[in-house]
Image (cartoon, rainbow, N blue to C red):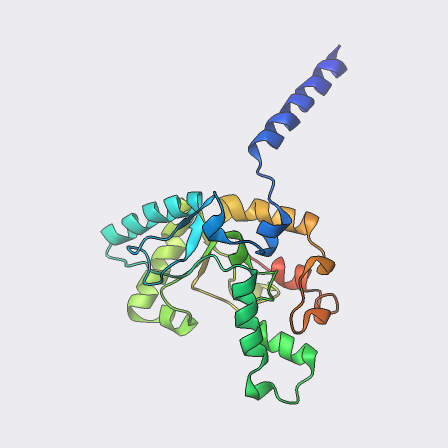
Amino acid sequence: MKSLLTILFFCSLNMLLNETTPNYSKDELLGTFDPAQHVDFKPVPSEFTQKTNIYLRIEVLQQFDQMFQSAKRDGIELEIVSATRNYNYQKGIWERKWKRSKYMGWQNMDKVLDIMKYSSMPGTSRHHWGTDIDLNHLNNDYFETGKGQELYNWLVECAPNYGFHQVYTSKEQGRTGYQEEKWHWSYLPLSEEMLTQYNEKIRSSDLPSFSGVEQVDSLNIFQRYVNGIETN
């Protein structure tokens, strides 16, 4: 009898978890969709950004709103400078960097490694998911003095209260992948599950074509970069 009750309990638990855990499509994970046409996304209001037509998932935007208002009360001004970037947008960034004159004569592997200090291959970026934002400035130096340092210190202390974490931290503790990005903050209540499903569903063969795509497996991009994060 006990074993039957145990089986029924775990079956019920699995059913409940399956009902509450979103099932993200490959298109959502790879960024091969238009966030403006997705029911779970909304445009970022002008109060939060100077950009137009940028989007976030509704839950992420709601939590950012709360964080924004809290920061404002503490004299901290938060500004979203980048939000959701779909595959085509990320490919545009990647291909422009690929054609830089400084890469003339470089081997493809060396070009990939240099670009990926700070930029993701299309199809591998967390910005595809609508959970990650870049704040205020895209340079670490900005956050190390003056108002930038005050802002960063506030984020380190307070952002986790709203679900946001700096995932690309210092690499001194052995984190792999991208260099530190003090501006990049991820909404972990959603992005952790999206990363789990990305690892389960996405293979290198799923990535659409772009310059340097042949280096994905040889450089172990999924393990070293997609999973090269800090979530504590």
